[in-house]
Image (cartoon, rainbow, N blue to C red; front, side, top):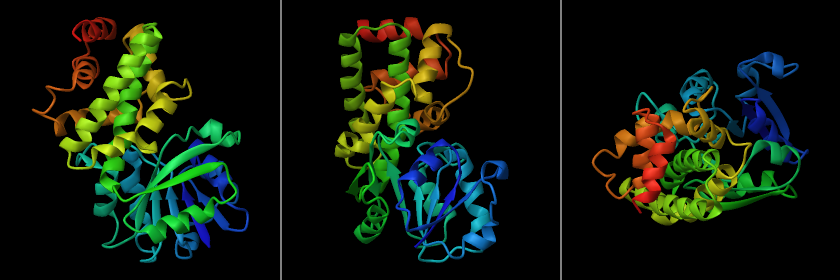
Length: 295
């Protein structure tokens, strides 16, 4: 089997390290310096049985386009992206359906997969969301004997939504850390976040149980409690300085998420608090104190 990775950053390199050595793996990056002896796309894509896109969502469509002339109809596309396309308000599954040829097989790989921990061989886990159980089995076979645990889900859209939501609520947990909240308050925040994740996934037409999967609560715990997470780091910076030096996928997705939920947020106090901080630019400390006091 021939495997291609588009994006040779931290997560791409980490996932590649989990694949059995017997497979033929090629990596490609927009910055050829990070991939010694990088081959051209026209040389590696036509032979690819599976292509992993390890990119932020806002690069996904533009990275798919150059591959279309070389892509086999049976090649399985795998995405680890977890945001919303700003121009269309598409979740990743909707983006892939729109950008790929009709009936091109694809899967989402979402879960607690902090790249640094994977690279250190500490173990990880993920949901493989696809409409084809056979494609799941093909994917799972790549990672036999590796330290990653895989689960199957056919709720592809719900998994895409859960990936966005865990990033958003990880920002909230970062704010709680930055404000020095005690574990009791953080426990309340986690419970509220999970409840809201279920509600949002249901409002957007998918199975609320997906919020309780590795793609939802599993990933939220991993990233929301880790300083390795860009979303958690952004939240901590907001709490301490009310600014952030760089953005994150959760932050970039939030305006689109808020627009999709317009008129449906009365039972979502944490999301409403984040809207005051991320869009209205109110001070995080004041907003979160009001959030907790209004329980």
